[in-house]
Image 1 (tube, rainbow, N blue to C red):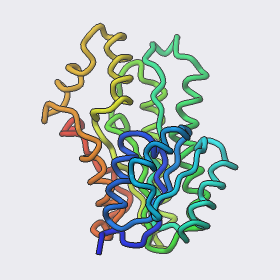
Image 2 (spheres, rainbow, N blue to C red):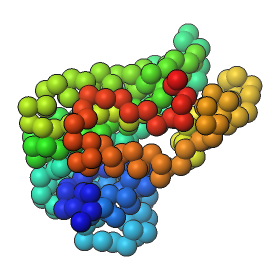
Image 3 (cartoon, helix red, strand yellow):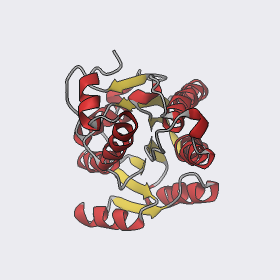
Image 4 (cartoon, helix red, strand yellow):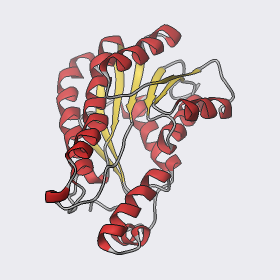
Length: 253
């Protein structure tokens, strides 16, 4: 028996590296998984790669849109039954600029995906979730730090922690656990775009800049983050709620 045997799981940001690595691990542990992403082609490729299993479905959606959120939650329920695990993982980055030059539309777009997206995911999933379930929100090491110029992303990642704490208090009577996971730099395209922005703003090599900040002196793999998500999704974390799980190689120390 897998650690998520016959549990219904929603994974947003499912076409990205962390989402896809987590979906793969969830399936290996016996889960039924609905992948959600705005990238329909990416979802199709991933579903084909994972073998078109009967325990896998996908829905293309903008997580910042309430109607599309309600629709993907309903698809999960209609396909697999009440939800046991919500992994709210969709994200975008924005730009690195001084505050006076920061584009308002970029700030709003980043907040919409990270904060409104996580809020809507919880709002529409909680009524369809079994008691004893688990909600995991992907924040970041940026959710406990500050860096000049990274206004949208860092603000959004801090806001997700506040959302998590409110949910953890409200849902505790139902035994639903709510936690944030805080990756440090990960070997993926998302991090590359971050490093390009930071490197350009600071005139440094972005990857080396981040590695110098990490006591373990390297980036994580998506699979390492996925294993920590599995811990929070499974009964192994049955007495863990309201926490900020750092998976950052010591960067936040």
